[in-house]
Image 1 (tube, one colour):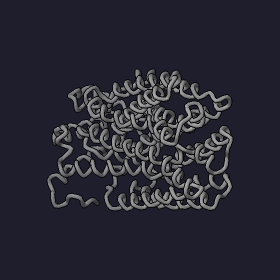
Image 2 (image 1 turned 120 degrees about the vertical axis):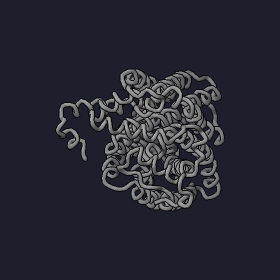
Image 3 (image 1 turned 60 degrees about the horizontal axis):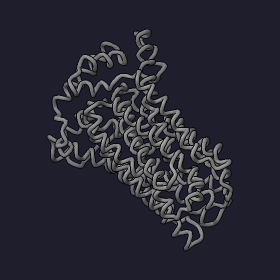
Image 4 (image 1 turned 30 degrees about the vertical axis):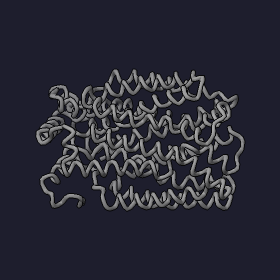
Length: 471
């Protein structure tokens, strides 16, 4: 059902109010995604100036580039407890505080070690926001809109990426890298103010016994009849769960957790994030020697990311999650092979950019947004916070390792072959393996309520014979 059709139901006046309330809540939560993309991508343009100012070796470049990512797993580790103990909303407020501290600290850093420390702090904020924002959106959204609304988080990530590259480009003239990081304070203030006006997750409220408050939120979003039905399903499902860490090791939930971890790790080691993170550096390797021109070419790539994210809203509405992910995996394999050919045969920078568009599109249309959608909707209610935090922590650990190894491996190939093309053959192999993993292991979650997915995994606990054999 489309948004327009939803608004045209018999309870039209109430439904319009409900949808506005829902959309405003989702937009505020999605600012966490904007800060995710903005924070992690700012460094891609600034690193050109940081290398010169601090005389960085390739090893130090990897550490600087990965410092925020290194902090990211600590955000979910805090979130394992915080999201369940103090709620989704207050945890997002803490993420905003960490973002602000990082913005100010990086802008004023006088030594590369201090800069790395503050980037680490910002990474903790990214880790918290990237875990709790999609979880919060999934828990407040109706089942038929959930996929598209969680996708708003990914759209916000793409906007953050594009905006940071645009800011990097404007400030690259004169090398004002400190102002690049200071600008992050503006969206942080918007985020913190917006959180003052959104409700808490109704499923978290129900889990901690605040049933009346949970029902009030559900009724405002779904209407009295549907809201009451959803509340009944939530309460019935909560009776089957303990919510403790031990529940994560029950056979069905454990399998869900392992699949979630595998999917999130795959989303970071597929190579596309390294293309996005190191875009200016790759353009320099392709023959563009002027820093502003290298950053400007990154703007084209980020505009492409936004276009593809818009198309992804249509894909997720029409096609099953698994089919989209499998198709995206094939596309990334082809794209990385094209990247290999463009560098190996020293094609012009314009053709290198064209080659980059293929794996980036394949990722942004499929694995990039859907990895967040799937893990936000596949876990049982009481352990969703813990499971998502563990899966996200694993994702950032994989991202940190990849971000640190990528410049070193790329430099090795440059030293030996004069170009970094072979790096992308490695990523092609990883994407092929990831596609097989999705095909064999991932269940379909499209159009299922969160409670239906919870019962799916809990049934596996009672049916040991079906362990590991997913539909």
